[in-house]
Image 1 (cartoon, rainbow, N blue to C red):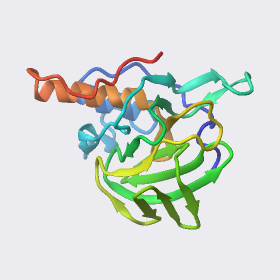
Image 2 (tube, rainbow, N blue to C red):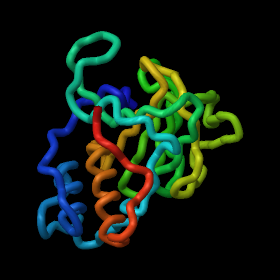
Image 3 (cartoon, one colour):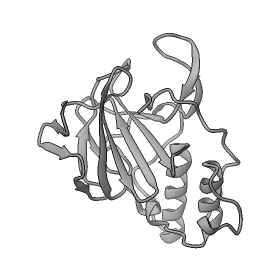
Length: 209
C-alpha cells in the first residue's frame, strides 16, 4: 500500500445536502456512480449510523486534499482527515467490518485498515505495536481477518510515523477511490438531525481549523 497520508487526492464534487442527495453526492465524489446507475439501486446507508472515530475530539488539524506538508513544507496531497486527540485516547471503528490490513511504515506509522463491504476505513499514527498479523495497544489486540463492531475501541491515538503531534489520520475509500472524510461526517450529522430534530447529536464534529 502506498502511504495513506500522501496519495493523490480525488477531485471533489459539490457538498451533498441531505437524504438521497447525501448518498448520491458521496458516490459521485468517489467517481463510481451517476444518477440512475446500478450503484444507487441497492443503497446501503448503514454508514450513516457510524461512530465518530475518536472518543476525545480536539479539532480538525488538516483537511483532505492538497496541503503544505507540516514537516517538509512542500505541497502534496493529503489523503484523509487529521483529527486532534490526546495521546492514548481511544480510537473507535467507524463502521462494523473486518481488519483487512495492518500497516507499519514511516508515513502512517502503526495503522489499521478495516473493510466494510465496498468501503475501507484507514487509521494511522496509532500507539502500540504491529507485529506480523497482530496489532496490540493497551488492552486492544486485533488480528487480520478479525471482525469489529461499529464504535468498538480498536486502537489508541499515538505519535508513530510522520506526525508533529498526537492525532488520528482517518482515511476512507469506496471501491478503491478516496472520499473526503469530512463530508461523510457531515452526512452522518445531518442524518441524525433529521431522525431526532429535537436533540443535538454529540459529539460535535466541529470545523476545520
